[in-house]
Length: 414
Ligand SMILES: Cc1cc2nc3c(=O)[nH]c(=O)nc-3n(C[C@H](O)[C@H](O)[C@H](O)COP(=O)(O)OP(=O)(O)OC[C@H]3O[C@@H](n4cnc5c(N)ncnc54)[C@H](O)[C@@H]3O)c2cc1C
Figure (cartoon, protein in one colour):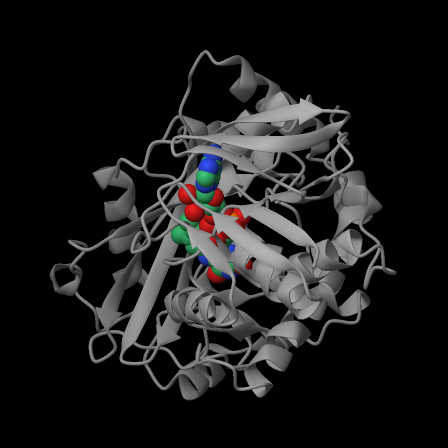
């Protein structure tokens, strides 16, 4: 039986384990976190987004970014710091924020998200475990003309790519959402879906454990021993582990290990927050993005999750109260019946999105014969989990890939 070790028990690591287990691999997953701890893949908004085909690095973001950079309550904040890795990331980000890059990346991002959505649907139909997957679509809601114009332009582009899109009036939005929202209009993408990420992660872990996948918690990989162009051993805080095949799925922490593999893999952590509200106070039927505030709203059973902000501030999980309050303040601007003092942010969750400078993930082979990387999925990691896992399993068995991903090579900056 072929053996594979996966570093990282986030959605990317678990989805890879799922497809590798199906192909008969003996899988071991190593994670520095505690079993009950939640990484970036737990508290996110759970949106599965074929409608999101524009990478983070896109025209307009630089002008907005310069304004936002100096405002710590803005949706996208970069903490100024004299750090070579950050400078290099910013330079690469600037170079990729072009119409040409968007044109080259949009179709691939859409196709990856679309196929991944189908794979989630397949997992759901197989009834292996519960994760509240629903295909109710996604609404982009705006209450300013400026955002409305931007969203309409994106909707036109989406249509030209064959994505189903509907333009909605405020009245129609309120009918569908069964609530009173203060919006000027919205764009509806009926093909999108959502799920409960906490349930997906927890239940996928238990499912894999039952199938014999081995988990090693509180085990931090600190180094890799390379011989004959292969990684032979992982050096961890719990001793050495021999490896056969290796997948590095370590999200925002990936650059540290990549360095040992002689890879230039620029990833910055994009810190974001989420909190849940009782759906009796604020609820939506269809998951939505509040466009001006860049806040995602997802119905999760009796609760509604609000998630947002992106802060490039390093790997610390320290919560920045001002940024959490910016999400809180935005909610009554859209939900007419919600007062700010009804919103409790005491249990706010924090996560680090692994962001590459070109807005595309790194999926593929490294310089060493037995090592693959899957990281850098930024705002789309939940959405892209299954397709990433499937591609990784196909790469390890040297099968034809479901979709070509040369553009995502981890060697592209080396
Ligand atoms: C507020 C917010 C909202 C979001 N909403 C959405 C959404 O609606 N849809 C969507 O698609 N995405 C969303 N995302 C993004 C998504 O959550 C991430 O892209 C995704 O979780 C990244 O998964 P990952 O497996 O790459 O990384 P992680 O989940 O961070 O997992 C990486 C794991 O690697 C482990 N690790 C790292 N280094 C080591 C080491 N040296 N040794 C051992 N273990 C190690 C870590 O402990 C961690 O468990 C959101 C993110 C945030 C913050």
